[in-house]
Structure formats: C-alpha cells, structure tokens
Length: 435
Image (cartoon, rainbow, N blue to C red; front, side, top):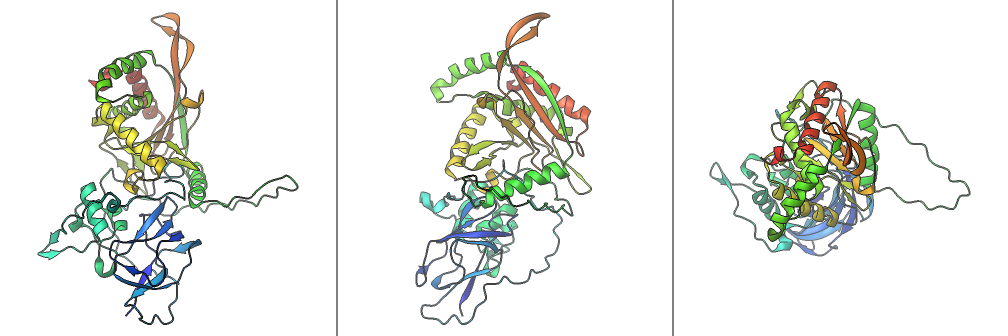
C-alpha cells in the first residue's frame, strides 16, 4: 500500500511552509535518509529528509507552492508500478495531544532571530561523510530513528531514548530533536496572542516601482516586531561608557593570542560583559510567561548578525563561563555559518538575552526591540572621542552609549538600572570579567 509523505514540522513553531523545490521526480527510487525536497519555513529554507524507502509514485504539491500546512500530503511513495488511487493533499484534522508538563520551546525570533535567506539551505550531516552512530536501545528494544536524526543527536548530545518520534511508526526524525535539544528553558507563550492588524495595500500611483514578494522570513520579521511593540511594555535605560581600558586590554590580549590565531573583537568582550552582568543581576536574566516568571541559571547571549534580507542571532551558550578566546572563536564560526545559511535551529533559537551592536555603522545611540520571550536586549553604539570627566578632570576619552531595553512586566526599572551599572563597571574595568 502506498505511503503518504506529509509536510513536516521542521521547527517547533512551524505551522505552514513553502515547498520551495523538489530534489527528486516521479519514478525515482528513495532511500531512508535521502534529502528529497527543500522547504521554506518562517525561519529558514531547510531540507526534507525521507524516512521511508520506495519509489516516488506521485507528487501532489508542486514546487513553489506557498502556505502548505504541516500535515498536508505532498507526495506518495510505494512499490514501483503500484497504483496510487485518489489521494487528497489536504492535511488530516489535528489530533488532540496530551499536554506536556514542561513548556514547549517557544519561538525565539522576530527578525533578529530569523534564519538564512530563502535561497540558502542547511547542510545535512551526511554531506560531510559522517556515518550515523548506532541506534540507542530503550527497555531492550532498538529506538527507531532516521540516520540523520541519530547523527545530529550524537553531535548535540541529545538522548534519543527520551524523545517521542513523530515519524511513521513513532520513528524519530530531525524535526523531533528540537524537543530534546539543550539550552535554557523558554518561557511558555501567552495563552492568547493579539491578532496582527492587517496592513493596508499600497498604491504607488505613477511612481516608477517594482513589486517584490515577501519571503516567509520577512513576513515573520514584520509580525514579530509588531507583536513585541504591541504586547511588551518596553523601558529604555542608557549609560555612557569609557572604552579606553577595554581597548587597551584587548590590544594586549590579542598580542598574546596571536600565536594561537585568535583575535578578539570589541564585541567579544561586550558579550562576556553582558553575560557576567546578568549573573550578578539575575533579576534581569528572566522571561515573562503566562502567570509565571522563568529565572535562568546561565547566560545564553543571542548576538545579532546581519545576513542578506534580514538578521539572525546565533547564540553563545553559557557565555558567563566561557573564556574570551572561546567566545571569539565560537562567534566567528557561528557568524560565518550564519551568512552561509548553515546554522541548525538550536544554534539560533533560544538565548536568555540579546546583544545588538550597530557601532560599526557609526550609530550614536538606538533603542533595540526586545526579542520575546527574552526580557532584555542591549543596544551597543559607536565608540567615539568625546570630552569625558576622568579622575575629576575633563579629558578626551573613547566613549560609547549602551541602551538596555527591558520588558517592564518582568524587570523593574531599578533592577534594569543595576544591570546597566554593573555592565558599565565591567566594561570600564575589564579585568573584573576575565579574573
């Protein structure tokens, strides 16, 4: 009997997607683990892995089709020459699932958290020629998981015996790994979300123009920015910071790290400073949930990285405990893969607070939009020579403005002010964060 291939949920928050491209055609033989299609979600263009073997009998959803709901039958596979019959592409009615005790991992991005541009794709582990690890065993029985899921689980340190598979026969597929990935817990989403207001169509009149269709990522940026500003009461706190000691320390450390091929950026030191500050003021390392406050025990810093058509925020997990050289090496590697579209969801979904640095553009000061369910984001502006009082005398110093945006539901103004004070002290006396 033919087997249905359904639109998969490639991330914990995916509800629909665009079937961007078929990588196989009707009549092709398919093996378990083969990449058969590219699917554009609200976060990335990702590869769809086959979990069953057989011949592709019929494609039911053409490539380029938008708004394909998760669960929609997109193709049929079976024995060569097998009759398909009349098959509807409509998704099955949603089944009532028992509620889990732990909150599901919430959507972490509104633009800064979005994934690479639609014409990029994540590279599967098999592209590197790595063999899948042996299947784990639970209660004496072999845990059913696809080869790619086993490889990714081993790389991420995920115990497959603790994950319930959503594939055929309870098989664990790549999409299930998001439920077992590590990282700080996310706050549960609000029980009801305010509907996003409809945007009026624009009449350009006789002005020369062209119309560009919005990508799923750009639609999500618009939706998440609107939701954040509508639902999260922002409070903004700004401090001016003398960078001279930090710049001197950076120069000295880079001289010592040169033989190891490590070069610290100012941003690397600011990531560390924010992480340490969040540990010293834990009242700001939180998320606001539905009737509860999530208090994180480590600082996972989401760092805004510009990519074509948007922004993505790779995460430095546990930045408070990592050395500056480790943060620098990890940040460079994540930023490079982000621009190539090779980040995995767990590498950009999460984080307990964010840092956005626009100093390289000469921006003097700006207020960043909070990335729910995080409760704060630090906006870093350009360092510039300014008159500044040092040791009770007016001198010229390299000064930058830093503005913290705080969710006032979760963080009181006094606590936000304490965080800004500690952050300023750490940057102006940087030996305190490397000791």
